[in-house]
Image 1 (spheres, rainbow, N blue to C red):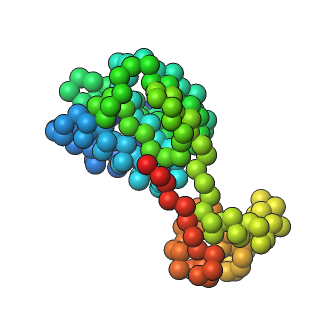
Image 2 (tube, helix red, strand yellow):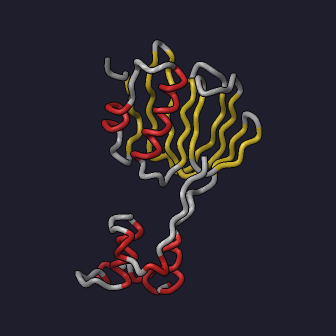
Length: 178
């Protein structure tokens, strides 16, 4: 049985991965947790994720939403938001059967304030070491095929190169805390 997944926003192009990984035959809490984990990991562990039972009261204010969709488990519709930062208030029941979230946040009961995801230590060090590269990278004439600090920085910003490419002294990433 496939998941009924309705997508409204998918900047990251991850809808198929989420749909294929989620199992509607799980228990309700497992369904919600799996939806959260699948969304978080398919978004590259670079965004906050909120999964919420839409039949309950809630209020949200998210910035930079890169994915929104909904999934149905046995007649219950869950919203799935992937975003950079913002706030969410659960006005209904808690528990894994009604909501799950992951990322960088502070929680006070039903209120969650999400922070911007931290940048990797490697990117921060490269930006501090080569501040002029940030400006240069915005002009088309500065793009070259050479392997330079600038090209390493550009690739690191998009996380398209393996960590072993960097000198050992600057590789350190910040992992999300659940």
